Image (cartoon, rainbow, N blue to C red; front, side, top):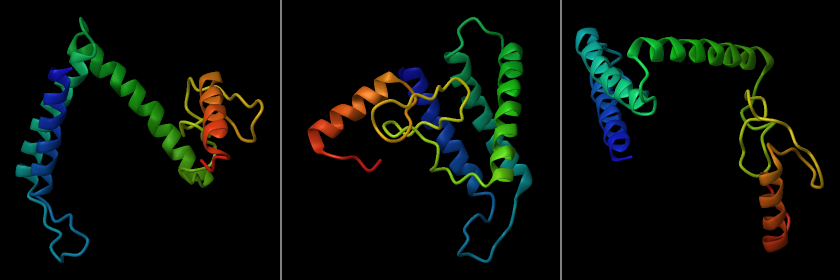
Length: 139
């Protein structure tokens, strides 16, 4: 876990360094981009990103990991395009307890006792406990 934490922090730092190479502030007039320096920081960020991905994928080659990641990226990109096309608001169709998106692959819809939908029985139970303990929930 320390390895992942260290690499996440390093990745975040490299992304901040990349931001310093472009005019990203909406309140400032500069919209500059120092592309070479920006790319250098993004390569550094990629290094730490790949460290993280390889750290959670023991025994996997960088090439196999890149192929898996690309496949998942393109699938998620399609979901995002569909959401934009259909007016996705980011709020509707979420589990009432954990707020997980019920449209995600691998998330099943479970709708028993309480009004609204849940991703699984665990969230229904947790929501019921909150209702009993704190009263009606507006999540």
